[in-house]
Amino acid sequence: MNKKRAACEVSIANTERFFTNLAAHRVGGEECPNSFDRPGSTPESTEHLGRPIEIDEVHESLGRRAKSSHGPDGVTYADLKRADPGSRVLTALFDAVWRTEGVPSCWSESNTILLYKKGDPDDIGNWRPISLADTVPKLFAAVLADRVKEWADAVYSKSQKGFLQFEGCFEHNFILQEILREAKDRKREVVVAWLDLSNAFPSLPHSSIFRALEGHGMPLKVRNVISSLYADMRTRVQVASGSTNPIRIRSGVRQGCPLNPDVFNLTLEVVLRCMANTGEGYTFGDVRFNNFAYADDMALVCDSMGGIYCWRQLNWERRLLD
Image (cartoon, rainbow, N blue to C red; front, side, top):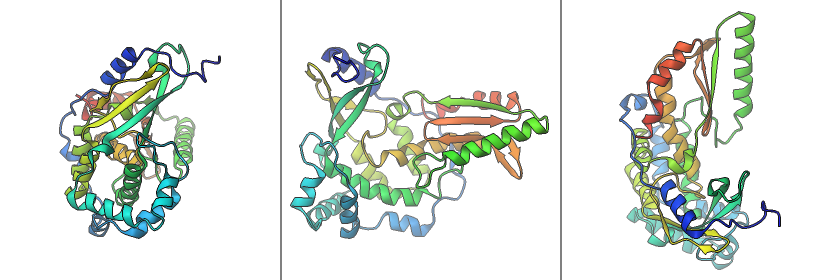
């Protein structure tokens, strides 16, 4: 049998040990108050973010949900559309969650399947985890994500292009190419360092997430709801011989959740601002560029090795991890 298509045959015990360590509690790094000293979202967008849940946005969001694998409760989006065609029951449920600022405990449960990547199939690290959560909490998170994305647009640095409405990777590539061309033509020094943050999504400390959301000025009500979504997250990882016991997820963004792209970006924004605040970078035209980020992939650009060393001395990764 082609091992790329087979179920993971790593033992349940080893699988549970690996994912328990991966999802273990991590402590966020030092405070970075100077990262939150720039203007953020407008009062109007903040008010819009915190308004009551409306039936139209729930119904529209459900209508956009395509067929997807179900979570532990076995309910699909098609089931929701048939059972509640007007989205009235779902809206009432979501409104109750919004008013109480707390989600049902069952919303914290998920199943995790493993997809083979490459390398030794007996190494659990060579399998990509895919979280399968229930559709009702995912729909609620999708409604909230639409609001957060609109609110966060004014928060993000121009260097971050990941998970945004418009494709920005081509823009990054073009500007970086032009910087390299100009440096060559004008015989200027330019240094580029490429970074791919390892296990960035599953290892992000929850304390760093909530500190970033607060620092960016997200309303307390919204932060409380997101905190409730993150409380007591649990998953069962499925392998060929069965499933693990429930594993407590105490770090990382909420996998499979529509909110996780913006939660990740808002947290990483702290690092991007710390780097920009050093003043290091490369001046192209009238703009000082220092990094090009696409989610957890980054290209750092500077006009000397000294600038790269300056960023390294910041211990910038400790802005998120201790």
